[in-house]
Length: 478
Image 1 (tube, rainbow, N blue to C red):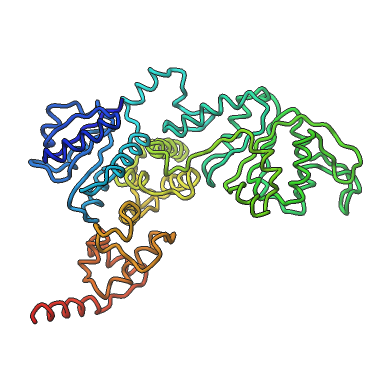
Image 2 (spheres, rainbow, N blue to C red):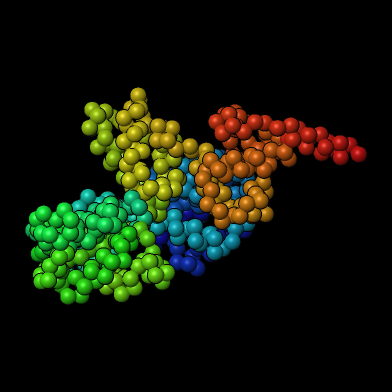
């Protein structure tokens, strides 16, 4: 049972939250202030600390450092962007405004505990299931629930000869998973042939996969074995199979069904014994419904499925990966004492990483090469922490949330804007009705930071904000 410490000075709220959590099978302890929480409880014994921001004696954010590896969820009735940004900059794992919806609170608690396993929780998990992997398989690192499930599935799937479909966003490590399956299979001593279907020109894909006979087409001066035939006895990994042309899909389907291939220009078929692993970042079921991918081929390759979680959903794995990558880069460059600054850690764990592990690896490599200091800051990683926090809270609060005024825009709330686009749009849409101080407060940045970004994005100050203030003053005078 997960243990949660609730730190809240208002007895009614504290009791209601305790009952809510206990009804959902959490073990709950209480405290009315930071000092009481520290003196009467061992913070390391909990899986989560939920604390009010405004407490007697000391703010709830003081518990962030005191709790160490235990995640801290900050709640406050002062639902401002500034307080949320400040809390997360100090290391809070999340932020929720009072009065909170029960479902929202339970959802946040469940997600945080799943994404941020504490050392205590990991020890209990290892004791309950000592055979479970927590260090990854064949170069894959991860301790979050999604990765532990993946490791378990790899172990079960690998010894079979069944076809495997690996699903995951670009940069999540699908080829590493394919190699792991092969290396833990009965074919480990045989060949693994990897083919990136998106990297081979459409006119050559069939000859590359199936081979050809001499004279089959202009330029075929000798017979050539295809990659499927070269994988005979071993494993064939087809990466980005969603990019395979329809003609090649038809020939691949016959290979899967009959276990045989026919070289281009040949009248004879050849039997092959190949285990097939496919991977894609695309929705093959949707593509097959749209006629862009053969439905019968989709059903043939969708036998055993492995799903890779995106980096943004892997909790503390992100930081472990970053520190491991930095160590490797430091050894390569002779900078063995390199470390991440607190702001870099905050940036790494809150940035969304659309390019996943590959993007993180490149950011770490770039920072290690270019940094003149042993401490890597978020700027060296190319991550604007202020904009990351703005985007994070914008997603948490909802643009049209009435409890968080000042974040509404005239755009579609579902529109996928970059951080820079959002910043520019917000300034352009509100600068005529807000002063520079008000704009900075709503965006959670300083006036100096707002000025610097205006210069960077080429957004000149208008007199609209001043005019709006004069109108408000005149109206008040009347």
